[in-house]
Length: 237
Image (tube, rainbow, N blue to C red; front, side):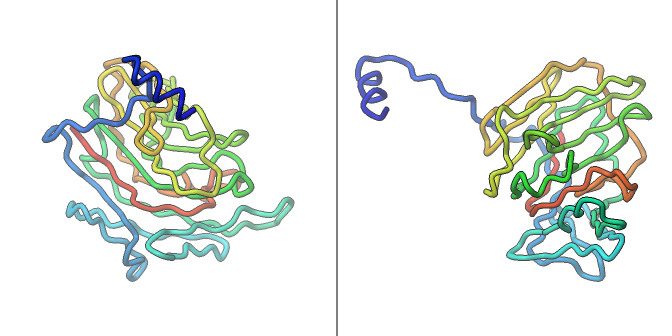
């Protein structure tokens, strides 16, 4: 393959590549970031963006979120037929900068897990609820381990998905980034575009719900995340 590429380059042929994530300086502002480097203090994780939105650690049924090597590690998936499941999530209060409306918006996290750690669909980040207001979300699919970026606008029951073209559940660290820009919703894996879809230019997201990381709630059938997580952030244009 290296020989073929070298020959093509010598002949002046263009070798196509997947588009990489490009930043336009000065057009996006960091509005939230949690890197987990110092773990939790009194159940709180500081927002290193300086915006002051601390995460609260919440657990149920003896769940424990561990902090190891600068990352957060969530409780393991439940055994089949278990009467109770240890669960954990993190929550930040509603904030204006997490309600992007129709503006340019990115949300990102680094994840590490295997397919065996999927207990079904897994919510990595979620603000809002589809069908009852508006929502932006990052999740993993239950059957194939692909990453999804999801948006649902105010006044609409339609959810729009950008799905990664390949699984991310290989036990390695991957950076997942979701981007809404105009009518485009895109997903990047390790800074390379891996999926996109068209959304209405008028799709607007604004709700009073908290941001939740690692799961939507503690209901019996909640889509909990069971892997390691690092460097969660959001940017607003």
